[in-house]
Structures are given as structure tokens and as C-alpha cells.
Length: 228
Length: 321
Image (cartoon, rainbow over all chains, first blue to last red; front, side):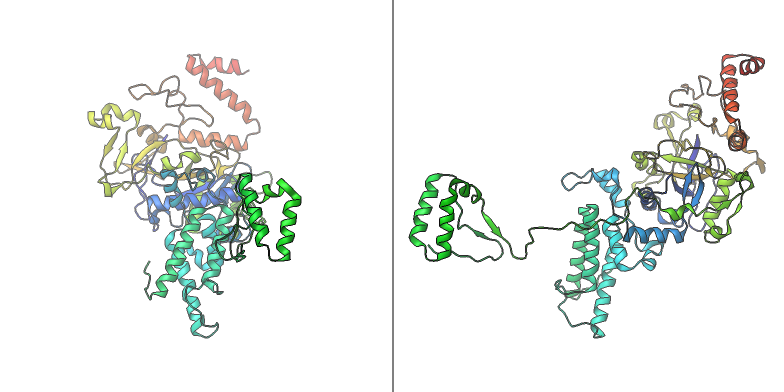
């Protein structure tokens, strides 16, 4: 029986003054007990939740571990996290949090569970995920596992900017913006995201992706710049 | 009667639609015979007569034809991996290594992995090896409750709360006793007591609390390195006693929810069973290295039970023998 909380150190290690009197602070690391993809995904979601609840400065760079009585401790280093995300986006059948799946159905949404679902969304802009994964892989992660609205919007805007640059350079025929019948990068990554969302049965992500894609296209058509 | 065979979006083909009544069907047939113009339609009507009532039954549903509609949708092909598959590369990411016949206390750093680790990861690996951190597994369904205990909602006018330890109640004011917390203090988060486990070095051999299915993940808290009291370094065990930080041997069912008196004191032998953190580390060492740890465990349990019953130390040994 130990006192926890009270003090906490930020990402720079400042303010760490833990004691049995005032508390052991906030968690210094997170761990899972099996190396299964399901549990590792739960670990990434737990990190996202802690970041949403405690603040990014207290969770940035927090170590992720596997602790198993038979093999001891293993470290999910940054390099392994990148490999894990690549595997998740390319080879793993995406899935929702099993504890939330039945509480966030299209016809029956529990408010508390939906709030948790929002807190668990991955931030593609954080931890250099965008630098490691391709835009298609990011879209699949967003569709299959869920990502924050801001990071998905950034992904779509970047894709649209790339499309414009291609047009300007004459790499592709001029097309009408917003015409989805033509093959462009924006359409491609939205399709990737939608496919992943269908695989995991995430109706909310389907709506968000479609809405954000249409907002992006419509804003561009009207000449409005999106600031996110 | 002319038939419009167009098949654009949303068009409903009512050509053969009949309602449930037989009279309506027969009147339709009469009208149709009068207006037949093409051979194809004659053939269709012959088929209609030949099949009798069965044909009528099949044609009852309206046929809606939608442009670009694909009646059969092929499911997306499954990907190679499922949630239960293991991320095998993680198993190779061992921060420490030791030879056969040795234990974690003789471990040396695995430079291949160590060089890829961040400063924080090295720190937590060292603390797990030295047993200077404690872990807590959290039930998946209780994760929200646990996480929400920390943040101070400043936008709602909240100030940091220090939830009272059972032993703090006797010195607390009436308001604090009713609220069960003290307010204020130069801290950033609420503080509260919770149960933690001090695992053997690197978490070897000892199972964390709960099943891996219900208690999937957990958190690690660092133990304070040293405590300064009146400008003197306080011994860890003394600090534990002073702050009412209770510790029991691994596997001991303390059940504090039932074994604390209204004055905040441990009852039913729980106080007698308390051990120091040094004792916990010693137990962990024995658990990892001693070959007959089971014998040691039984002896310890007998000692505890007899001490609770007020028997002499001689009787422990007699009972054990």
C-alpha cells in the first residue's frame, strides 16, 4: 500500500521529487504481460489515454515494456515501436478495443465509453509516426485503430497539397478538384483508411474520414485555407 | 400497355408486379393480352401461364434497379496476422544477459539492445534489476477509474487532493474526515494509496496480480531513492513505517478492506505480518536463487500463524520439523 500521485516529472525530468510522504508521482513506465499484437495495441492505447488525461509532457517518451515471469523484461524500443506500427498497418487485421466495441455501437453509444474511445486515439503527428510510415500506412492505422481528428486532417491536407504540386508540375492531367472519379493521392489514402475501418468495423472512423475528406476538398474548391 | 424498360437510378420496374389478390392478377393478365406487341412479351406471358401460381409468388417483390449497383460484394481478403499472434522481435529485446546457471543478479548489459534504448528506458531497466520500482497491474475495466484519480481539474476550480490514509483519520479535521481528503499542497496531481508489487529482479519468476486476460497491462512507479528528514538521509524501512506504507510478503492476502479498524489500525494479524522492504528484497532473492524455496515459504507461513496465535518460537521449529 503506497501513496502514488502528488508530484510528477515532465519530459525534461524536471519536478521529480517523489517520496513516500507526498506520493510516488505518475507512472514512469507502462508494461504488458504478453507479446501478442492485441496486448501491444492495448499498450499503445493506454499510452494515448494517459497522454490525454495527464498531459503530453508527462507521457512523452515513456518506456513501454513486456514483463513476463518466464523471460523477464523486454523493452519495446523506439525502433521496435516503428516496426510494430508498420506491421499493424500492413499485415495485422485491425480491431477495436474489445472492451469498448459493444458499448459504442451505431445504435447504442455509452457516453463514458465513447469518451474513452476518443482518448485512446493515436496521434499520428506524435512520436514521429508520420516520418516512419507512408501516408497509406498512416491512413490504414487511422482507419483500423483510430487516430485523432487533427492528425487525420493533417494527413489529408498534405495529400491534397501533393496532388496540387503534381498538377502544377504537369505530372498529371488537370482535373476538377473534388471529382473523386479521378485517381489522385487524396482519394487513394481515403480509400485505404476506409478499407481498414471496414475491416475493424469502426463506423465512427468511417464518418470522420469521409467528413474530413469532404471538408478538405470543399475548402480547397472554395479557396479557403484550413488552419488546424 | 406500353412498357418502360429504363433502368436508371431509383427506377422501379412494375411490369410484373401484382398485389396479393387473385382478382388483381387476373385483370392484369386481361389487360396484358390486349396490348401485347412483341414476341418476347408473348413468350413471357406463356411462361407466366405455364408456371401458374409459383410464378406469381416469385414476382410479388418490386424489382428496384440502381445504376452502378453491384449485387454481390466480395469481402476484403483477410490479412496475415491476428490479435493473438506474437510480435516475436520483442522477445529478442533483452536489456540484460547472464550465463546458464547464473541469475539476474549476475546479469550484464546486452550492448546490442542497450545501445538502442533511450535514457528513460535504461533507467527503468536498471530500477527493475535493482528492485527500486514497484508495479501495478490494472483490471481492464478499472483503467478509467484509476487514471482519472490523478489529474487536478483546475478549470473546475479543483485544488490537489491528498486522499487520507486510514491512519490519518484520527488527526484529520471533521470536514476532512467527511470528505476523506485534505486539500492544498504544492503538488500537481491528486495523491492516494494503492497496492503495488515489488517484483524480483527484472520481474522474473513471479506472476503479477490477476489474469493476463483481465489484467492485460500495468504501470510502473519508481520508489524514492533517499528521503531527507531534518537534513539526514532516512533509512528506507524507517520511512516506510513513518508514512504507514504497509508491505506484506508476496502472496499474502492482506484484504485491507476488511482488516482495518475504525481507528485506522490493522487487525486480524495483518499488523504482525507486515515486513520491511529489505525483507521483501531478501524474499525475492531467495525465491530466485534458493532451490527449496517452497520449504522456506511453508516455514514462513507457520511462523506467521504461530506468532498470531501467541505460540513460542520453539514451537515454530517443532511444527516445522
